[in-house]
Structure formats: structure tokens, C-alpha cells
Amino acid sequence: MTTVEELAKQYSVSVDEAQTKFNEYLETELGKGFEKPTAEKRAMRLLQLGFKKQSIGAPTENLDMLVFGQKDAFDSSANAREDAIKLFQSNPQKAIAEGYTDESGTPLDRDKFLDYNKTMENRNFGKPMKPNWMRILWGVDLQEKKPTTFILKGDQAKNMEIPMFTQIRLNGKLGKNGVWNGTKSTKMQILDGDEIRVDEYVDKNLKDLKIEIEKLPEWVETHGKKDVLITEADVISVDMELNAGGSRTIKLDNETEYGQNVFVPESTPIDFGEMSRIIVFASAKKGKGDYGPTMTAMGIWAIPEFKYNPEDVEDFDQAIDYNQPDDEEIASNDKEEVADIGDDQETKTATPSLMVKVVMYAGEDGISSEEAVKQAVSNGYDTESVKDALKELVMNGEIELNDNAKYVAVM
Figure 1 (cartoon, rainbow, N blue to C red):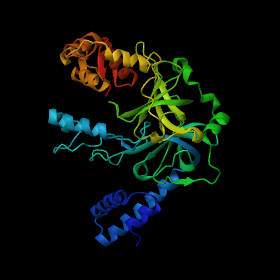
Figure 2: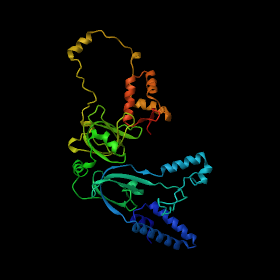
Figure 3: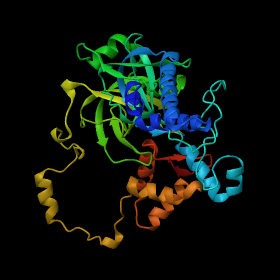
Figure 4: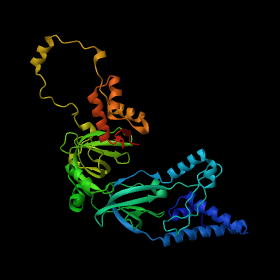
């Protein structure tokens, strides 16, 4: 007799999932009065036919894709599970009565149907909520030559390795919203062909999406945060420290004094250093108040001829001061008497890491610029450095102004 493990491998599902379905079928058949050997055969047949029907009844299509970014796998049911637990802790009677949890506080699946049209009944309704793993891939449809999104699900979301900036083929179902959805039978194939030069491919096939970094303020006025833009620019700085939102920050040269910050999620590799020239696939949105637009990287490709490793780049942090005195002036000044300023009279420089803590301690109500400056100055910090730190935190997306013009942390 065919085993559960063999069926799981044949239909690309996890052994645990196949075993769970088999046990459900077996329990049903035993309840009908069949002896265990017969019930097992009937349950196995139902399992095999069910997988076959699922495979035949939901035909998939192939998508040839160049993936330029992906989000780490996440459990889309995690928030609902957490909310159910909190409700049980605060009001167990309501949580149990309305089907959020069972009597022991275990979160239950409350969705009666699997689709919005309410045509597919959810067999797990009223049972303990299962994880719903998903992973989002962003890339280019190589046939249509336009941006596309593919959502991996289940075990594929957790375990499938997807190479970046490589021509691959995925099989899935194209939804009415233009988003591709993976199935339990989704597989990935690396396609034969020459390695794609991303910069050349963009200029040839995606030039309508490419903008000059200086034009970003105009672009966000006519586009939404779900739209994809592509830009090519030089890297001024790379900050690998995670901000409050869990992202690193790179600064691009946009011909302004401050440059353009780009937030880079942990799932997007940074394999280049300062002074590199890169192609960025990103989303963007308007900044609040007087602050410029913010960008979030979906994928980054460094141009090989202009790619530098962090250790290859000279430290340019120290700006050149053309008014710096020459050696003779220094020697002359050394002879002059200067005032001896005691440590207690020196002011300290406020850093962004310090000021973000000040904002976070203020909580949901936030803190005004005046209050933040007052607190910092009373502790010996320089006023201008406080204002500069706050401005940098806003530009980095770590804090923002609320409706009451107070700074709050971006969580």
C-alpha cells in the first residue's frame, strides 16, 4: 500500500500536512463502522484522490521571472493568533463564546470559507489555528517585461531557495489583481541563458520605470507607495545598524546637501560599500512636513565596474576644511596664550541614537521639538546637535511628526 510519505513527496506537500489529512480521513472512516485495516485503505485512497483532484482542478501556469527582491517568510495568521490570546487573557468568556479560542486559550480558526466569494469551505474552521506561511517575491516578468509579484505559500515559503537577479521559472496561478500565487505543487527552475546585466536590461526593457534620483519629489506626487521605481545612483554612505523599523540605511547622492536616504530591509543583501554605483528597485512615498520623500529598497544590484567592498573604500567621513591653518600658523598659535575651558563648561553633542530614546520614552503622546531640546540642553547637550539628530531620525524614518506636531517613534 502507498505510504503517506510517498504521497507527500509525489504531490509536493509536507509529511505533517499529509499525515494530518490522513488521520482526519481515518477517523471519519472508523466512525462509519469499518474495521481498522479497511478504514486505513479507504483513508489512503481518499488522501490520494484528494491530492490528485487538487492538482488537476487547479491548473497552474509558468512564469519566467527575474527576482530583484523578496520579503522574509512570515506567518500571516500570527496577528490574529496574538489578538485571540490577548482577548482570552482579558475576557475569556467572550473569547470562548465568540470562537476566538477554546477553553484552554488555544486560538481557533474563525474563517468559515477560504475565499472571498464564500465558495470554498474551510475544513479547519473551529479547530486550532494553523500557521499560514507566505513569502513575497518582487521581480520582472521576462515575457511581459513588466514588474510582477509572486507569493510563495506553505513549505515553499519557508524552504524554497530563490536566487536573486537570475532567470528562473515558477509555476503558479495568476490572480485577477495581477499577483501570482504559488500552490503546494509550485516548483522553481533555473533557466538556461546568458547572465543578465541588470543595468542594460533596465535601460532596454524597463526605461519607463527608471527615474533620476533628483526627480523623486516629483515622482511621489503622481505615484502610490505600491508603485515600483528604478533608479541608478552613487552610494554616499552605508549604515548597517538597524533602525526602529528593522532596516539598514544607505544614502544616495541626489545633488543635495543631505542626499537621499533609502531604507534597506534585512532580507535585501548589502554586498557593496560606499562610493559604489547601484541600481535600486524601490517603493517611495511622500515625507511628512518639510522632509523629503522616503524610499524603501525592494532589491539592489551593484554595477560590477563601480562596485567597491567596504574595506576598499578610504574613510571620507572627515570633511576637507580649506580654511585650515598651515603649519606656520599652527606653530604661531601654539605660542599664544589660550583660555583654559573646564570640562564642566563644555557642551556635549547629541546623537541620533540618544534622541531616538528620548522620543521613545515619551510614548504614544510624543514630544515636541522644544521639549526635546529643553530636556537635552538641561543635561548638557548642544542645541544644534539636538535639532540635527532629530532631523536625521525623521529622514531615516525612525521617528515622525504626529497630528499634534510632536515626534513619535515609528514602530
